[in-house]
Amino acid sequence: MLPATIDHTLSQLEAHGYFASRELATALFLALKMERPLFLEGEPGVGKTELAKAAAALAGTTLLRLQCYEGLDTASALYEWDYPRQIMALRLAEASGEKPRSDTLYRDEFLLKRPLLQALEPDPHHPGARRVLLIDEIDRADEPFEAFLLELLSDFQVSIPEYGTVRASVPPLVVVTSNRTREVHDALKRRCLYQWLGYPERARELAIVAARAPATSAELQRRAVAFVHQLRSMDLFKAPGIAETIDWCRALAALSVTELDPQSVQDTLGVLLKYQDDLAQLDTQRIAQTLAAAE
Image: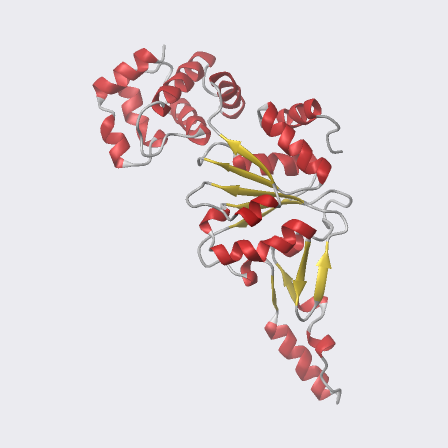
């Protein structure tokens, strides 16, 4: 059952392990209520993809995910025809003396459905549940692919030349994410509700870490989150996201670290920072200063 209020949305997301801000919960609630796509933009690792996963769990359905990349086309995103089976059907028709027709070749049984098309149809495993489609990292796809999405995002339908128009009887929840490596066209954004996801405040990130990395002590979680927040205030090429904070706490637990000190931080810094220039900024002395500032 979908949430009835914003507060209900917050509690439902939290029940599925996602600690959203009220603004984000409001955006999700409105996307469900108004049957509009939701466009999430922000730095990598701030929880955009995780929100779609939590929304699918909330809706009681399986998440459909389309991972975008340069060169993505309709065959990978929407559909393609099963050519070997079509040829076999054509030969069987010829062998029986039938005259081949287009409806012989372009039937539902020959249609290989990709995530965009699957999202317009009922979930076969969860009858009655609303489909949730994640179009992840749209900024990685080519600009013409954005234009291809406009019909889906505005009318929840797609047109297949040989097959006809497929329209959703129940509009799916479509979540589109972008890491803002390039600007996404205004035509796509206008069809969606928009929400920017920044890094969370310390208390909310601590709640996330406590839920996702419970093997670490509460004090170590507190100090780790405080240290990460100090790192984000530095001039880094790529500041660590929530995902890196969680991974770091799990790594500390795996190493049986019970207290943060400059050596344990330096040993595990590659879990937090992914670029050599950023790692080079943090020698043992700088780490000690950052730990002291995080107290």
